[in-house]
Length: 77
Image (cartoon, rainbow, N blue to C red; front, side, top):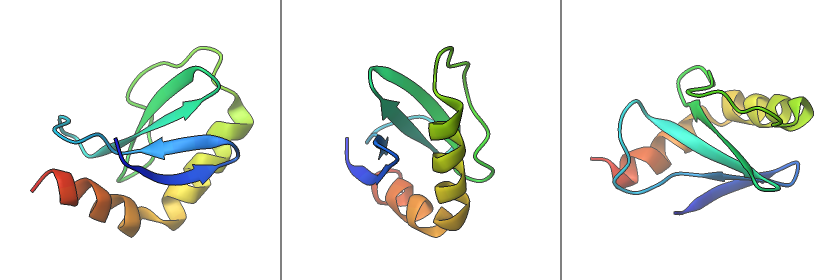
């Protein structure tokens, strides 16, 4: 699972052989959430995921969408 960024202490990952839609996994202190790359919308509920970290990762994803799409495309041709 290649890490594409560290944001506010959270690891932003793309998993090889994952399923659509294109998304990233965000892991922070034992909690995880998946965010759709195109609009940073959560794909699942993540009770207890810190709102500050989610806000920082979402802002990063909006600013680095091309990088996230390239990382996804590298593993999902």
